[in-house]
Image (tube, rainbow, N blue to C red):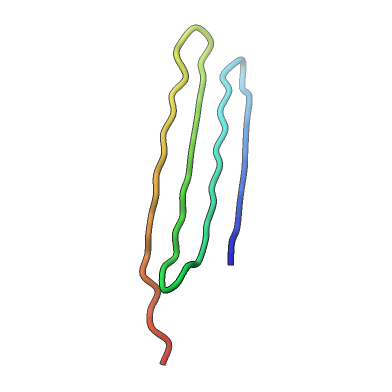
Length: 59
C-alpha cells in the first residue's frame, strides 16, 4: 500500500513546497517528507525526514 501527497504555496514572493510518500512494507509503516522554502534574496532552505513505525502483529 502506498500514498503520496504534494503541496506548494506562494505568499508575497516566498515560495514553499513539500512532498510526502507513505508506504506499508513488511511489518512497517514508512513515511518520507521533503520540504523546500525560498525567500527572495536568500538561499533556499531544504529538509528531509524519514519515520519508520513498526506495525502491531495481527492476532
